[in-house]
Length: 105
Image (cartoon, rainbow, N blue to C red; front, side, top):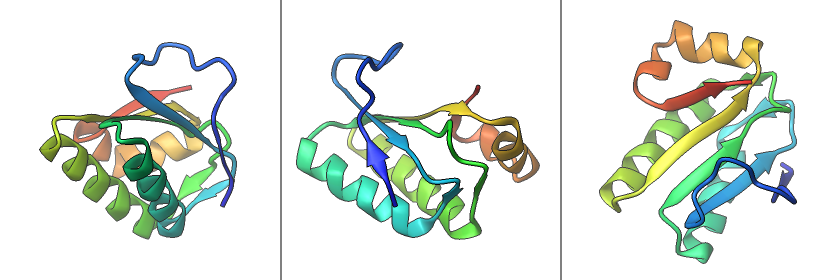
């Protein structure tokens, strides 16, 4: 799992953590690492750049919902940015685009 912080995180609030997922498959394990980094930062707003992700696994979808719920309990927000069409289709078919803040590329 490869996570990076974009050099110039555009369109993200100053109090948000912005992470770019560099893997082509988003897995549940990837999101455990994201949660750990988010806990370390103390921020409650997360923008995940999924521009490199072709597809999320079923476990990743469940982990995203859990992360979304956790951040909302803390008064925060989860945004999935730069989602490629093939990955967006997964969110649309599962109707998670109605629950999560999913922004197409």
